[in-house]
Length: 523
Image (cartoon, rainbow, N blue to C red; front, side, top):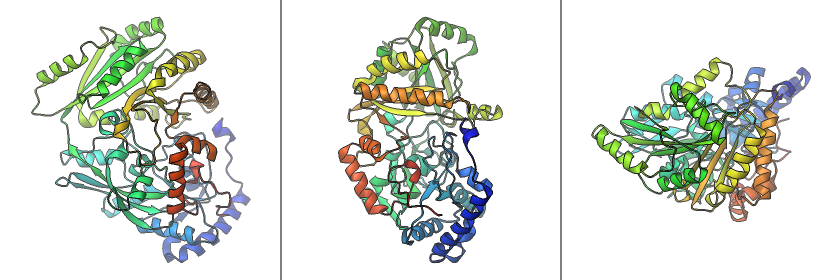
């Protein structure tokens, strides 16, 4: 439906846009650098590419696309907008993996960060520099996490906090938080950043850290691109594990499922923990990873028929060459003793560290080959306080989701420790010491994505009506009042103060719909 209703501007409108836009942009950019206009694109292919994202529901056409060849290009572009009588909106776009148009700039300028990555690769400069002695890696904001993994592992080290999917830009995940099953122990990715180079909404290129320009440092991390464009991040490193013991256990009792999860994240025995729902309207082996042996599919399907919903606990333990596998197995056996999972439904694999972290890739390639990757993804990601997760299970998992009975994608549910987050950063999370992330990672057809959207809205309404203090992750709010409620009074006040300090003309990331100004257009 979204694809059918989207209409590209008519030839006359596009021509008028090009003429007026070029005049305004080139005039402004000449003040900064004479040849910067060579990096502007307004052809239909370039515009179409950045007017869509992974969600494939929202389509916002920019006036222009900017292909930077250097960080200075980005600084000059933003500076030209900031100094213009009528500033134009600018959105930095990494891989476009957002699902609600967050990296778009309707009638504005999209900075294609992938162009900077290609330019650096062409020049042989590279955007990833590993310092083993210093135990850190310097990474360009345009670089992909999969390349960070491959480059660091070659040196026997690696970051400890990842996202489930690695073909995302570093700047993109750090602008949100960057979460996965490691977050309970190592914190989100933003908690593992030591230093950054960023370009503010004034066009200033600034180095910041906890010790230097700290207000900017904390603002940018989890800041939804509102304060600056991340051009370099220094990320802490640790020795690379050799192998991973990867396990799955099945539960029919949600209380036992959450009790075991909360116990496991309270100790440092595991390196990764996530949970998922198994239902008849979803695949036993979802696209995130194929794990259960085919011979057990009927047994598991029979359990789902009996219990309606199963809860799958996914665990991983890293280990090294010098460690005995026998000792490791004994340690895991003792750890899992007394757990409330269903007997006889325990599964394990031993895989390499890289294979485990890149586990989603094979599913992606399969869906791409079937033409099912670039479809609408009406996702909803939430943070739920621990004290309200049981109510959420009965009202949403066993209520809304089960009763609607529409084919779903993966549904994630796993806890995190608030102590691993830094509240000085912009990311907004629940106040309780333990909170759950719940992700409804739906895929749909172009003619029925609104069914999932309606379900998402029903879930949010249920939370509102029942006083569940939910926070959206990768939030899709549409009004400033909704954003104020998202952050809470105190954090919202700080957020606004930081916006006024670092992007006072409201130039950056208009697609988030936080500080939009209708006058910020290019034509």
